[in-house]
Length: 43
Figure 1 (cartoon, rainbow, N blue to C red):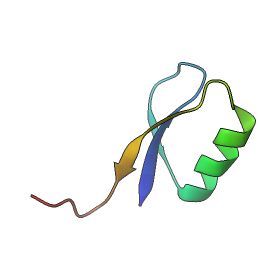
Figure 2: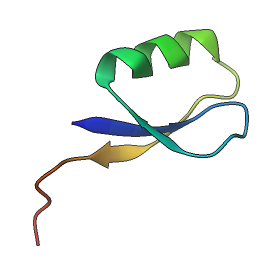
Figure 3: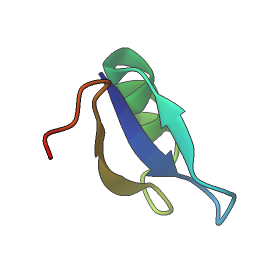
Figure 4: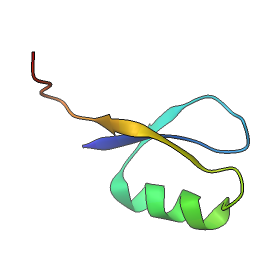
């Protein structure tokens, strides 16, 4: 499972849950959560 996040107005990127926590702590003012990406999506 990956989370789509954005920091400092950069492009969106997919990161693991642990990296999401690190980015949120490092960029509290510019962190944006964009949703969850799962390998097997429902149709």
